[in-house]
Image 1 (spheres, rainbow, N blue to C red):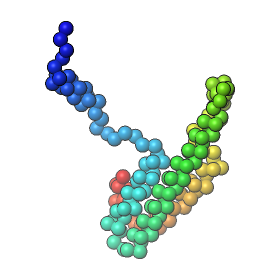
Image 2 (spheres, one colour):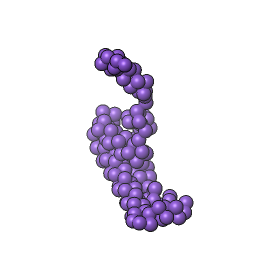
Image 3 (cartoon, rainbow, N blue to C red):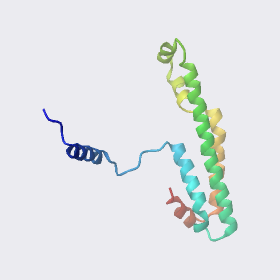
Image 4 (cartoon, rainbow, N blue to C red):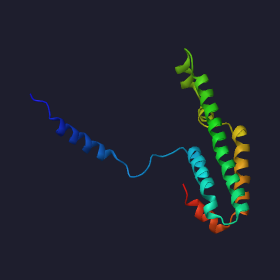
Amino acid sequence: MSSPRPSALALALLTALAGCRSTSPPARHPVAELTASATAKAEVVELVVPDWQRAQRARQLYLAIAALGYELDQQRARSAERGRALTAGPTASATARALTAAQLESLLVPPLEESQPTFERYVQLMLEMRSVLTEDELKRLNKVH
């Protein structure tokens, strides 16, 4: 039996890869999206807002929002670490089977008492953003991802 020619094999591989191509980018975690979006907006806010002082304040607010995204990532990492610690060791599989829904949720998301202040700070920053920027400026900046 003869082996396929290299060009035929390459053509088949390219055809298979083309069929797997997606027209949309891969989904990001909401926190990563928050950080990326706020950072992108901070970079272009001066192009949208003509008043230098308001543009600088909006830039500071967007950078603070990006920092909150990083903080939320750290909280999620701590939750994941607690989960790894809980399910590590010789009794890991028994422990994992014994987890309640509430315990499982606490491993996947930060505890409310840990994440609530971060969320409240985000709301404060967004309310201030609404007082700094006009509705038209907000709409234009919301198109930036």
